[in-house]
Length: 425
Image (tube, rainbow, N blue to C red; front, side, top):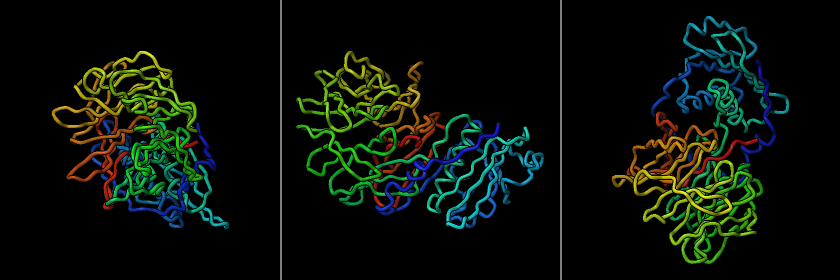
């Protein structure tokens, strides 16, 4: 069945949320490993795509290659979406699918981008898209097409058009930066001479919560990325840390030491209605709402060493979740609620693990020794985390099966504290 898609104005605007702040040094992406069953697909050059700031076909190819799920068949020619497709020819070249398209510059300066995806085995059209947008949205248009190809051929929603946030440190300056999922389009949300930690996206992708030390103590803020307005959510006595959004975006879970030792609290997104929900004699920290909002995962040393626990979001009995190893921290839950990611210390190494919550099966995903801050992609297929190599901190991405790995580095300082944004509506 042919599927027609139009891109919403909101999604387009997302690409320029911080447009006035100025771009920073580009992240460099290195890819290793491939998926177990790569899908052979040809991405033809789009007809007349030279009128765009960058060739859309190149951006689409880079997205699909980065996923590790596709074997790219060299198309070496331009094919418009209106062309008569010789399916046997493309099958003969080893392609199970073909993407073709065109770009036209309209009188008002916008780019009219059209694309179709074909199943060369069955000889049918799988999908199509038609969008007109200003040239500065060129990359976003390409990411949306890559998302469509990924979803039609794998059955899983693509996440190429999503955003990431992270902290960059250069000398004594800290920057909270927002970028496209491929590391392009970097914009600065906040600059400070004091540390910034623990950024967390709101479910609608318009805000980021984080901890800033700009007032010489840790305070939890929420910043609107569209208006740049900031709200103090928690400035209690002692430490205010580790904000995590509820799935509906109305509340945050935070870790506060206001009553002595650190415990888990829930607060409304505007800073009202603070309520303590954990009560232990140990340290309870790093809270994370479950995918359905009914539970909170958190780190606690109540059993003698740090382990991950789960309790009702309203408070109550906590049950231990991690049992492998004596030191497990930084819980993150996948969007389907089935997989827990965390950092585990074993043999002196801090490494990224995932736990299948149904089977209890553990899997180590990283081969580095100093990992931190895992964050799932919104489709649950990849995890971004911070790591250290050669005394430099960088970001890494790994597929949940451990087969595909990426490293995002920059020449300008250390990058850490990543958080992967949601799907934009």
